[in-house]
Length: 284
Image (tube, rainbow, N blue to C red; front, side, top):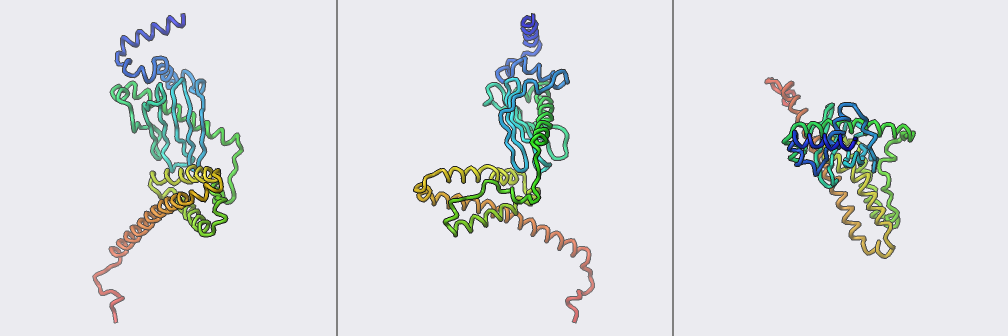
């Protein structure tokens, strides 16, 4: 009887929703129907939720998972520095259906990308958006519960854990490189402390470099044999140069910002205090 009911409802949807055939290869009838049930509060999202991976970074979490065969990935900020976002993929997961982002101080998701079939049909677009919001709300609380369960404690000296995984044993026998590496680390920490002043693209790039790219590079380099380490020293120097240039770019932007602030302050003072009377600096 249940199968008969489902097939009958499916036939009705085919009749009254002819556009369904366009998105059926991405999300099927049953999944869309269950999405609506989740949105309307008739069923919880977590029953069909399977967390695949949760990556913890300094300023955000990246969470991948499946719901009812649909793959999604979410960025969950630990502060308001980063935009919250969720991407929904269809069946197969290689097809991106939509990307929804939440700006600072906002309570609702706005689509920044939607596959054409979902853009043309408001009902499909709204279903995907509203479901993403419910899903994200649950994932955000999931991360909070996970943090509490783990009994996460904060360090008295936050700077100590900023560059976790950046210790480079190979450089200990190369004083000049060790000195350059220490300089890069110091300058990187300085840019991290002014994270909220950076542009959003630079925030993501800096955090990814600190939490993932550099530790992975060090780990892979350390696995090389001693001979290969010596033979690939030039590649190590190139990598250190790339890191140096990236941090230098952030520092140049910082200096430009300081210069703009100085010019602005100078202009304010000039407009407020520069009178027509002869300046005191020109008096004899």
